[in-house]
Amino acid sequence: MIPQLIEQARKIVIKVGSNTLADATGHINHRFLEDFASQVAELQKKGKQVVLVSSGARIAGLSAMDKWARKRDIHYKQALCAVGQVELMQAWRNAFAPHGIHIGQLLLTADDFRDDLRTLNMRNTLFTLVDEGVIPIINENDSVCVDEIKIGDNDNLAALSAILWSADLLILFSDIDGVYDKNPKEHQDAQLITEVRNIQQLRDRISIGETNGFGTGGIGTKLEAAEKVLHYGIPMILAHGGKPRALEQLAAGTQQGTAFLAG
Image (cartoon, rainbow, N blue to C red; front, side, top):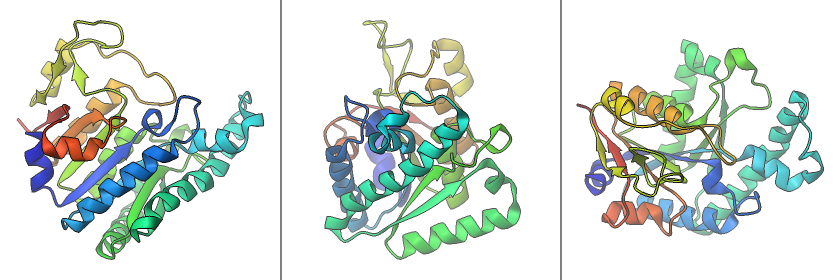
């Protein structure tokens, strides 16, 4: 089913999580970015349009401002993201440059999706960028966000972006192969669920668990994202983004994942 979803989709939103972007030391994995960019370039050559939702501002900030690593004050955290956004976008720019692809940045908050005029402007910007072959890179505006306007995780941000753009497919890349009936990091007998058509039944069946590593979202936020896009008829794929040539392997059917489909 996953190769078929990718083949049929023209407009694809791909979310890359912090755990996928980070190397073992907690810094940006530039080799991953370069490899990922080359795969996106191949999708463009096939006539597909891609919008990227990228986590990683915090880890990029720590790469540049390691002396702030132990700071817990909210102002330092937001300042770290301000520094990190520059580093992150430069890393993505360097990754796409060899393919002659430009990138554009959109920093959003929950308020942007609640205001009709802002929503229209965001939509128009996305359409203009992708029509011109530019890769829009979306992230939450963590430097100004407070609880009242915070989406809180990029899984749901990716879902909202997919709906806004009327995407054909949402792909969430994480550090897991998909949804399991229980946490595979704790249970060796955990079974991968390759296809989901009823999310409530899935919730009743599995153990959600909590977030880990550098990310802000666990399986719970990924199910929320799936619920959002499926309501609009947009299928979703959850897969491990850190595996070699993950996009290509998913399209070829040689890497597993979980496909979320409308019931």
